[in-house]
Amino acid sequence: MDIKIEEYPLELDIKNQQTVDISQNTSCKSTEISRENAHCLTHRVQPQRTQKSCALLALKDQVKFKYKPYQCNKCEQCYADKFHLKVHERIHTGERPFKCIHCDKSFATKSTTVKHMRIHTGEAIEKPYHCSECVSSFAQKKSLVIHHRIHSGEKPFKCSYCDKCFNRIERLRKHKRRHTGEKPYKCSNCDKCFYEKSLLKQHQRVHTGEKPFKCSYCDKYFARLHHQTTHERIHTGEMPYHCNHCDRRFVQKIEMILHMKKHIIEQH
Image (cartoon, rainbow, N blue to C red):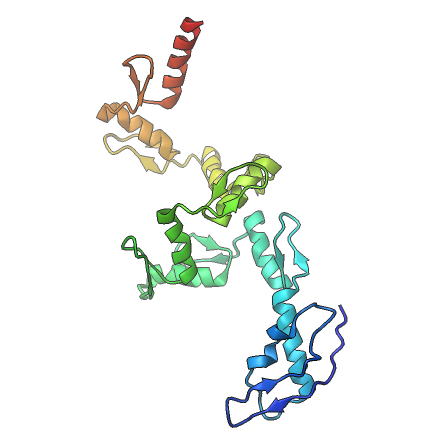
């Protein structure tokens, strides 16, 4: 995109805040950016900066925030530069090039890796943003905003395929894959693909034989947490699923569903 930069009459006040006053002819027709948003309106200018360079910097800043030519080919997200597009694409590919030097965890961005490694080093993480509803605290304001939706029940991200809404955009993206059929996470041992990375990790235990979930009452191990929870009910006697037609209770939901079908058949 070619942007023509014209010289504008500027008034520099070097002693007092070094603010810049731009004439009325500063609208950029190519980017359709109003002069009210121009960078130079409240911008500290170095004494040696020329009128042309200041106008160029103004347009560069505006293009950065208003013009996003790089679009993800998997979703509708757009970015101002290739770097941020590449970082975003890791959501779809599952790529995590930054590895923790203390454990096996990997991350999509360097900043997230650095924050994680503080857990191992014991370095204190400042969390100045406190939730007014509970004791949770956060290092970033955006994390507090996302957390507060748990209390408010706000779900601003609506699926374009159905009526479901979500409190986090990441959950919306995962959900939409079930509509589009996108399965970006592929098993390295077979041809199976999955909507979410957690499902891939769970599947890979079929190949590795890993069973990380141990029963609290005996020596049995399980590949899935759900299987461990269901098994432990044998020890505790818990039967959380009850029939609406009689007094029978069940350990598993599927057992209750199969039982209730008998009542439906009898009624017809």
